[in-house]
Amino acid sequence: MAPRSLWKGQLRLSLVSIPVELYSATQSSGRTSFRQIHKPSGKRVHYDKVVEGIGPVDNDDIVKGYEIEKGEYVLLEPEEIDAVKLETKRTLELVQFVEASAIDPIYYDKPYYLVPENQLAEEAYQVIRDALRSTRKVGIGQLTMRGREYLIAVKPCGSGLLLETLHYAAELRDADPLFKGIPETKADSDLLEVATALIDKKTSDFDASAYKSNYEAALRDLVKRKMKGKRLTIDEDEERSDSGGDNVIDLMATLKKSLEGSSGSGASKSRAGKSSRSKSASSKTGSKSAKSKSAKSSGGSTRKSA
Image (cartoon, rainbow, N blue to C red):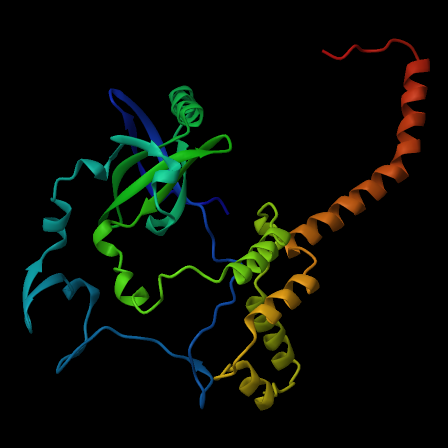
């Protein structure tokens, strides 16, 4: 099933406007989802929109309201909200360019693919993409979608553009009250040296495909076992041991033991396995490839590589 665009409009850079479409870059198909079930009857639980003292109401009778005092609202009709004039409803203008490193990761929210709407838009689209790539900049702008105006960042992504929504500064919680009890003094140099060595040993290139959700796999396994009529038993001793508690540990000894027992990251081992399998396959096909080339060269003309 082809994905459905979430927004259509113009990507604008100064006087240049390009018709584009926006698609979600994430999907939830890999997640295990559940329904709420009424246990005695085995039927699904449904929710109705109700008003206190009245009961269930029709969607046509529901409007949006802004609370000015407890129990007192300013009511807004859908047409009144739609009439709010915002240029960002149909236009995404890149008004500023910054280094990617200038945006703290805490501001990033959700990724989307920004694609040209038709072939006529591809040339200008490619120019903006390549200009962002060559300057190593990220374009900043605003976009109205689903009843909200988003702060966004646009950057190159393969042969296209990636749009990421950003949190506004007012949406972020101040971390100081949460971190204030943590000492600002530097860590012990010996402990830091061992911890740094452990980090260095487990450092490798990031490969998202090397990681799978163990929780999702466990949930699917649980569902399969329940379908077969098997019951889940809970190990209470394990639950208690995982709860932590006030155990005092020797940090240096634990770090050293971790360093000695570490054999690199899971991603590294995964890539190493793929590499060894690839090399093995190559060695098996090498002789066949050589014979094939020999047969072709004896058969007539040869091609010169450009």
